[in-house]
Length: 317
Image (cartoon, rainbow, N blue to C red; front, side, top):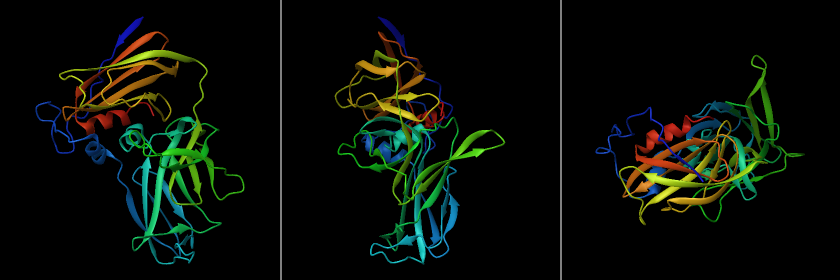
């Protein structure tokens, strides 16, 4: 058996949201992981759009939204021509996805995402909708290679939200007012934008199913510097695939120190683990290309949750 020890990657950020540095004596404590998720989840942007004329604007992560004239209606089917408050949230990086509990997963398996968005619209607090036969478009920037197999996925809420608050399901595009369109930058000769053509305001994802043909079986150990994992710990462990937006939950066992017989393809990945031990936040990352029979150890250290999320966002893709 081959054993490989994980080394924590040095963080470039040395302060958390409250201006504290990463000296363990000054880091915050947290009552639960829900408090951490509330701190780090992606925040929406609110924009007023004229229902009669439509409009366009950019979200917080560079996505451009275009709403055509007279595309809104209320719950009774009446046209909405006044001001609509549109709420948009974008999940384009892996750290944003995991800390917002918006993993690219489906009931049929793991996914490779071209980006996730959530769009809602209201007038005076009452929900409004896209009129039948109409659509809006979200132009989602792409930072790497885009697969030609990307499909239109819609988000549903799973019965168990402990790991992810969403499960994605593929929706047919043919003959519908929804589509995934590749927008090519001719100066760079590559697709740099995916146009999500959407016939409703909800959670939307451009995905393809993750297929593999070189599965390996290995073990993952979770170790900690300066603390001991105990029955009150709440830890999460994942596999991040390099070069694409794909995240696999290793198996939610909040105080496990070993995951045996993990199955995953032989490719460049990062093993990621984080969570609370004695109400303090710990995180660790280990890069590898797994091979059968190996054991990999991810070593956690106490760290600012904000800095750790930044580290995950700066991983490949």
